[in-house]
Length: 263
Figure 1 (cartoon, one colour):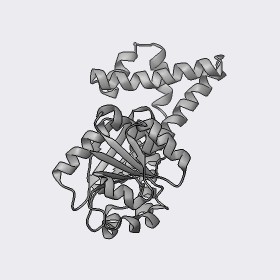
Figure 2 (figure 1 turned 45 degrees about the vertical axis):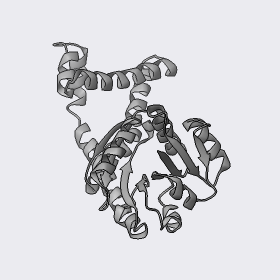
Figure 3 (figure 1 turned 180 degrees about the vertical axis):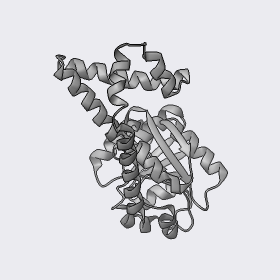
Figure 4 (figure 1 turned 90 degrees about the vertical axis):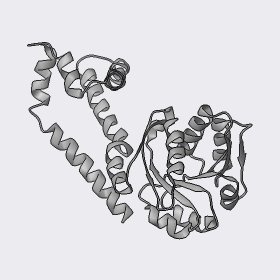
């Protein structure tokens, strides 16, 4: 099977690298305006398994599955070049609706994906949705591919805006929390390097503990909270604040903006 990429930037390289690691028989073809990006793409997916294409149309002709990995504002100029494509087309262009792509690519089956930046380290959290012509077999194939790069959940397209609010934009929000914890450590005597190391390990370790032990957040909170201990004292401050409302507003605003961009 040949996987094609139009656009060979960070996310394309992350996905191709994960796909290549999961299936040694896959081959890749890519196009990009930058020869440097193409060279990096070949390194990520395997120099002996990746080939450049002279045009976007050539990628579509050679690919069994074609990923549209260009910026949303560039996509309208790319789609007409792919009008004759008959392969399975996967768009990771944020905000661009499936119907917009299907209106131009009238012969292709279309799937839309909302990935996120932790895919760069194999920890992607993605949602994906079927277009009107995508088959159950298409969706199974895409689910297997995406799962090799992290977590992939199939949803209806209208829920991709919610996926954007939770996981698409989520890394920026989590990064702010990590930044705040790190600053608190520095303010209380730790070096920035030491505080950063401890906070990063705490966030990643907490996520892993919840996932691998099947704990709910509430169960973990109780596990850490000894009666009259330090955690209980800190929780009293956090849980009397409006942190839940702030997070809800943050996600809601992100979702609303995603809907605006896709209108």
